[in-house]
Length: 237
Image 1: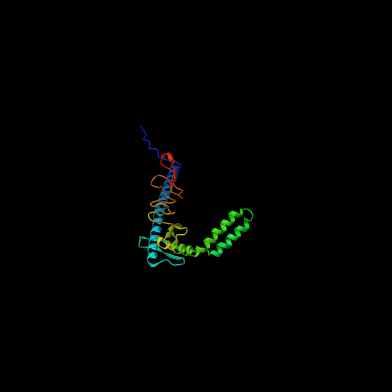
Image 2: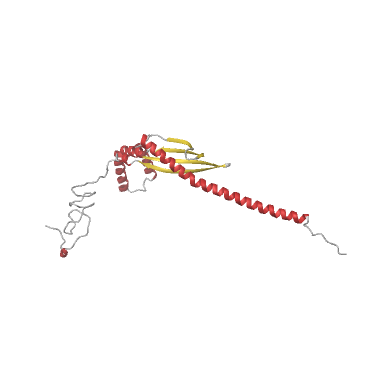
């Protein structure tokens, strides 16, 4: 008579080893998946936040151009509820660039001269003092024009991400070209009938003097080559 044997099963040790391997694999997969989710979330934040900051700066610039720039710093705070990101907050600063007075510049120059006393030639020092003296005559106009026409704007966006907060800063400068027209054309441009900047001595000449129709350099000009007499050049009597 043949005895039937039951199929052999797994031992307890084998089952425990298999469960340990499975748990380690699942943990690794779960960790990798969570890292992928965090990376995707950060990529979304890093893409959206700068654009929101730029958009808010454009809105503020448009508003200030309509109402007029103030001679003081301005701060704007809030969140992007209307844009569909209520959890993202912003804080924008429009910085009034205040330039120093001429007396402060003169004091700084005097201190610098004391530090470099004897290291600079007298001719160079005299030329620098003359140029700085000329600057003092026009500095109030230049200072006022720059302060009224240039602003530094920055916007800080705060994005919560779980227990961590990410901050993104976008900064730019605003310029109002119309207000820069307050600065006179110092050093100026001399123009005549048909002449360009720099004072052309021949009608139709450009900067620094143009070439005469005969191909010769006009008297007093510094532009254009000298044509030899054999080629029809030379100075007319």
